[in-house]
Image (cartoon, rainbow, N blue to C red; front, top):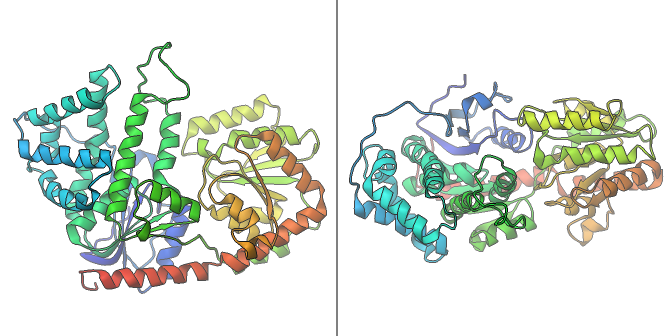
Amino acid sequence: MLQRKADMVDVMFLLEGTFPYVYGGVSAWVNQMIRTFPDTSFGIVFLGGRKQDYAEPRYELPDNVLHFEAHYIHEQGAAVEIRGSKGDRKAFASVADLHDRLRSGDSLDDIGGLIRTVLPMMKKGGKLDEQQFLHSEESWKLITNRYEEYSTDPSFTDYFWTVRIMHKPLWQLAELAMSVPKARVYHTVSTGYAGFLGALLHYRSGSPLLVSEHGIYTKERKIDLLQSRWIQDNRSIFEKDISRSGYFQELWVRFFEKMGLMCYQAATEIVALYEGNRQRQIADGAPAEKTRCIPNGIDVERLAVLREQREPGIPAVVGLIGRVVPIKDVKTFIRTLFVAKKELPDIEGWIIGPETEDPAYARECHELVVSLGMQDSVRFLGFCRIEDVLPKLGLLALSSISEALPLVVLEAFAAGVPVITTDVGSCRQLLEGGNDEDRALGAAGAVVPIASPEAMSAAMVELLTDSLRWRAAQQAGIARVERFYRDSLILQEYCELYQQLLAQSPEQPA
């Protein structure tokens, strides 16, 4: 069990469902950041859903992590005595005012003042504590008034319980905001619950809040929610319009959008990985003057040695490196291999990543392989070190329906592996270049539409059978990652950003 306690740190990371319990992606970046600044003291507040969803930590905490605490916001708490009360009308009026401003998007300049007013009242025994929200007459009035004014679903019961379930974690986050140790800078790598906690900590302490979004949290949650099976849809068969999501799905989406808006308003600096995501942040309410782009970077030299380990020729092996989850659309990858096998009978597909996050989806992927008779051509390797697999691949493929700036693409480039991706996130920029100098290097693979096995298969076959094009793609990828995506360039930008924010902090050094 991880146990570290400190009264104050330089930088407190606020992490939702990532480091140190989940391998790869954002977690690898957090690990890299902490180790890059050994003279900076860090703390970590980890937020998860349920404790049972996380195994042992996948990363060791570096020595400069002086504080660690983990909280699980969807755990069933101990039973408490229910105490009905009338409730404080003025306090609930403040909540209604906050909701109205977030809904309209107007008068956001004083959101911080409202949160500073509301936050102390949310602590245990306060006028807006969890008991007051769950069991007071004023809370009942607020919920019923909102239902009558805004709900388009006929079921008040479903609305009532959805609102309660949706808001319940906020009281745990409010309690945390009053107890988390002081930090000179709070740093969240997402909006969502971690971002909301960051906003509360910023308004409580006055310390700067840095937001570094690798993906756009609200966009990813929207994808999850629209695919969910647990959210009630009360529309009859005659009322359903397949082009529109159900009311309660939209309610959950708006909830995360408004939490994101509060995080953006509280942030001192907001970082996106690439320009497309920066524009998305602005569209979602981030003040443009706070935003900037800092891409991901990798240790090119560490992976460049893998080029020498490659056997002569182009192996007919295509790897998908990532979690076996719906957002990676592993099923399209499997179907792509089925189509490609008609022209390349010896092609193999390696699925390299953990299957524990969504076991039901992983099982469906295994069943799809069997149903297509691809057992001899598709291998599920689980978690592997990229150093062990990249030299054996002819291509890396990402079939995802959503990405930001995937590190695995940069790692493949450095190791001399061309890449095929869907047209998501910054993938087109990575494959084809982001400016004139970058584009002059050439294409490092191919970009194809989402959920198109035929298009991805055609790109696979063309690259694997055209050695001149394959070599050109390999050289373009190597040149691009060496010129634009070295971690030393990226980390220098964060070093300067940390120094700027630490200098603005009202807190003294630890």
